Image (tube, rainbow, N blue to C red; front, top):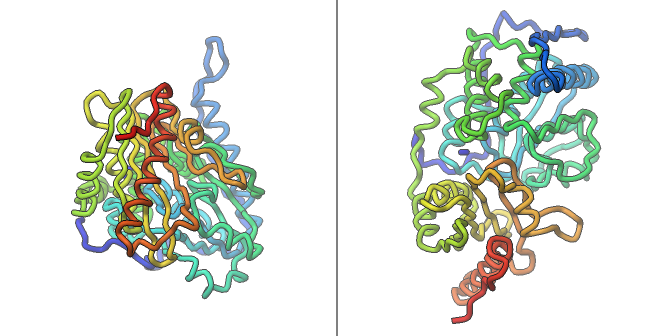
Amino acid sequence: MYLNSPVTQFDSFSLTTEPNSDEPEIEKPVELPLTRPSLPLSTGEGGTYPAQRGNSLANQKSEELQKTLLAHRHDRQLVILQDFPDPDALSSAWTYQLIAQQYDIKCEIIYAGALSHQENIALVRLTNLPVQRWTLQTLKSKDLSSYQGFVLIDNQGTTSQLLSAVQQAGIPLVALIDHHSLQGELNSEFEDVRPYVRATATIFTQYLQSGLLALDSSINQHVKCATALMHGLRSDTNRLMQAQEEDFMAAAYLSRFYDAQLLNAILQANRSKRVMDVIERSLKNRIVQNNFSIAGVGYLRYDDRDAIPQAADFLVTEENVHTAVVYGIVHDEDEELEIVIGSLRTTKLTLDPDEFIKEAFGQDSTGRFFGGGRTSAGGFEIPMGFLSGSNENSAYAKMKWEVFDAQIKQKLLRLVNPKDNPIQSE
């Protein structure tokens, strides 16, 4: 999914733009026109085409979002992304921010983890995408009472450390916009969750098409945002190989505005040596059964977390492998905690990553699943709790990894090869 740079993590990214005389400030509530592309009706059996139904829903959701934004004019909002935001999340959040600006809503786009994937770093740096890293420590220094609402985009809070702190501060959830399956009940004023859509960037492009924001190719910020959306759509559809009709239609619309040269520069970002080392470890440690490749890569720094999905992307290309799972123990020195993090990639059409991961790893004591997925990809995060840290003793660290490695393999292989005992005694 996911310019060569030594930078592995940014605390803050800011966006500065010059005033544009073509964009007057809105001083009073204005009903923005919503245009609807007309599609020919189907004359055959089965009613309207799926794309027509999707178009109707997109227009309906655009109207609902417009009403929600009008009701929150002059507010200040937090847009919360998953801890390790991908291009789909980053581009969609930026689009929301630009749409909300028309209603004098000030948005801060935040995440708690790291931008470590080279393409994500390049995306943010080359487009000046306005995203900030807020750790739990950062939250303590913020006056959260100055925010009237928060928004979840391309996630439902289950992959963000920030959600509970924001909820505890009494900030209401204004909007939830995502393309993943529902993870639980959230009381949101506006909700647009469409698991059948391949990318959240597609949903936001449909908002643009409906008239919530008129893109202008003469405005540099719009061109960069359209480029980011194209990257997000492309990455979440495996370079459009798994795109549906709505995704192709969204890409066709964005083709009028995006900068192909800028997108190419983002995609040409080189892998770091540390990423290559993790891929090498995954190759060395992998076991292959029933066309599944499973690899544990040991301990990783928090900043290198994105090497795990990249290793999974690589392993799934091996001959006679349709599914790859790569996992490791990620150490966050700032928060002094450890998490088992894993990624799944599959080319098997009949394998549902969301069902597979939820069946393999189950739920915690609160009923929250340790992971989930979408078409062709998934991930999981398992907190280590009491066993976190104390890795100064190399023998203990080795023993701890061996236990977690064996347990994860056992949970995966009971689904991959249920007749075999995955833990072999020597």
